Image 1 (tube, rainbow, N blue to C red):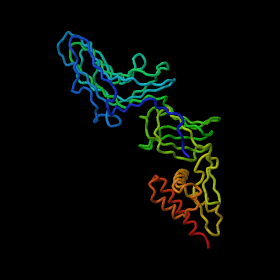
Image 2: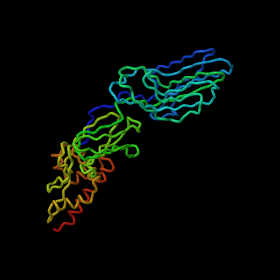
Image 3: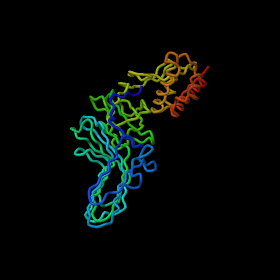
Image 4: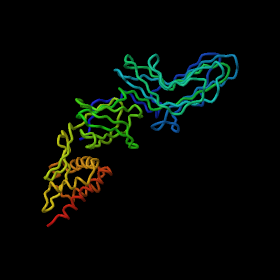
Length: 376
């Protein structure tokens, strides 16, 4: 059960927790040189960042006050990166700027968070307004003919100064180049719905329902800061019965996942395996649970037990049963375990999530109650 990633959407990922191989370029034209302060002018800023343990901060300063001179200065970081190929590739980068001195009439310049010259510029902030801006995510699409190794510039600061001094400080963090902003899930049947949620706060990122004649669902993740931990909810063809929750996915735009199942109808049986995924192509197809209460038909007892649980709880139980099978060496070995042994595993195993542990213990208690109330 679960999903298998078929296509990796991530092309490049820079967290900027260190300078790494990014090369600092400083240049100026004019009567007076620019100054880059404070020393060092390029720092890994561990206090002001968007993600990870730091960001890259660069400051360029022109403090001269002599009038009648024109100055131009640049400061940026550069590195060659393979941007891949294909239409629809996306770039996402976070940046922040801060300035505090008016450059004077006629001055110009700006800041670019990301730049491939003549191809794509993101995060443009023009001078001489110099009010700065808080952390902002900038997004763009690479031209189809922008392929392979490219000279990438980040934290690109430029000042064209007339008359008075000025400065600009730029931060950059979390750069991602990916195949697209869409995540695709295949192996589904018409009517099935998927929901993609953030792990951090359980917030819904997006959902999609498989259309007639289709086998896939697509979710837009463009608003997210990925790669990011997410989890997937998969619903049956009625669009409302939750049949699986797939956790522990680190998802990036452009990823494609194949779901293990082609259908997920639930039914009950009189044998020791109660909950079935009837059309499943993977495991687990059943949850190990049965009531053998004397004087009662197992089918009736099983249905009474199942009615006590929601679709989501049944899905959690199915996930836990896979872990149960793995722990005891497979489904055949599991059949030979006592209920007390399986209950002990459910109570103490670190493999189970809290939701899975809770529902499994409730299931066992329901079975115990059914048998205790059965006529002798």
